[in-house]
Figure 1 (cartoon, rainbow, N blue to C red):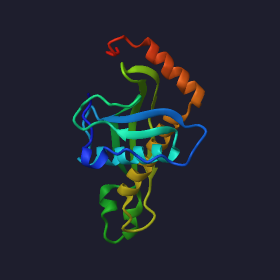
Figure 2 (figure 1 turned 90 degrees about the horizontal axis):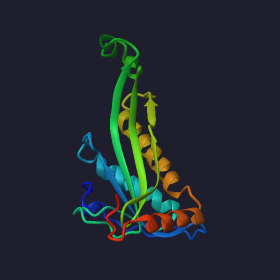
Figure 3 (figure 1 turned 45 degrees about the vertical axis):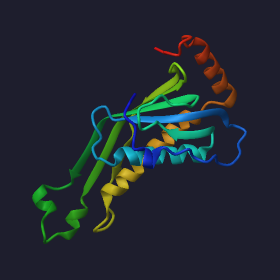
Figure 4 (figure 1 turned 180 degrees about the vertical axis):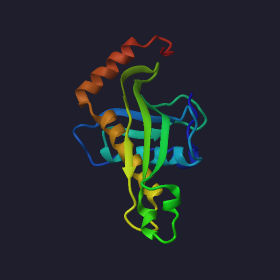
Length: 199
């Protein structure tokens, strides 16, 4: 089992959102991984919080929760496993570095861009057995330039990236119609070995 984020913060059984005709009658566990290592100690927690919040607001499943922190098997009907790889974080200066720090040209501090991108791979599987229903890969990229002196550009770039990822993941997880998702889950469960061991 992939290491999950701390239970104290992230084992949240989110309250269902507004009633919707498209709610799928299954519970969902979200599991995230950074196989190459997370760039900061808090990033996993931030990503998980944003994913749970976005999926909860979409209200397309009966319940959504984070993967158990102790590595035990999820008790939900479905598992959404998401991996983040090849994180690219670059600062691009318009001028030379000497020009950037020139005290006689304060506007030089605004002449740069932050570029952030990451490879995201996600799989939606039926439990038990982890039989895959669907999968996708995408690589979002955010490029931002400062608008004023003192702007926390790195925080704003990261926030935009988290929002972009959460929106894409929610569209993937909630994109299928209720009937299509039910058919896929039934087929996946029928294909699972009797002992639920999966692949």
